[in-house]
Image 1 (cartoon, rainbow over the protein chains, first blue to last red):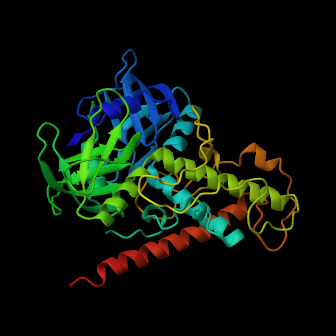
Image 2 (cartoon, each protein chain N blue to C red):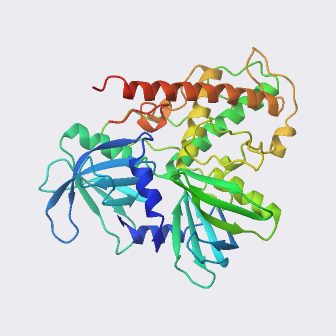
Length: 149
Length: 259
């Protein structure tokens, strides 16, 4: 699949929501835990060799499952292939929990649901749609059960 | 750089609702010929397929940090997706009608994660201010909350001049503010990040400190002032059921009229 790599590399250099050196294992036969710089930027998780400026890879965090595994460990898998897990071993249980929470909230889809929730809450409390002042109340992406065109 | 392409392809083709979809002409990189492709916008990702029925996208454009502009082109209804940076490629696309062009320019301009985050923060702020107002016994804030006034934004006149959100929101390096909101539980469905703890039920994050300090005078006029995690949860539970119901309704409607 073609993609705009230059822009994605640029994104990888942006300030991160969260970044840390974590042991990571990819779901490939024979792969082992390796120390990586893992960086969460918008809905992408980039991972770098610790001494390199360019990421080895990026994971788009949509339709994924974040699972707390054993102590200090969590995994990311994608719903179409739930057995294929990217594993992460943190330095502490606390760090592990922080990453799990952050990654669960990292998707665009999660944020959309949050927005719709807030919109509804405000509408219930005030009787007004808070998106009207931005002129975006009719935008497909802010509706529940968005239609396909 | 590796990308989780299989998951990307799944995201592109699964039945989660698209924010826009349709045929567009895409100008080639080296040759200036236009190719008609089926485009699907989901979140901040613009996928394109050779045909509408293709099982996998030919490619994807990550829209983060882009600008969408109308452009001068021999082709009618053309617009461009531009990125900053010297060597960045500009994607030139053309719609099949004026209306389609406007629709795409609008939806692409607002497709970034950053934009969505700005809107979420604004709403979160409004909600916070309303609840603070209620907790302090203002007797219910009908209409606009406290000190926040919306910038006077006119209705959209033309695709190039889209109304902007208040520009003064700071971009944070650390954890985004919205990350700290407690009790955002996802509605019980299978899509999205819905990891659970090992016992199999979703964990409730603790309330942030500032909310505990706000005092707990009940709000007036029957509005739901949060007095603790339980009220917020109840609200969210109720809302979650509503989302599920609407989702079901949408899915039924989709299946319904087809032969």
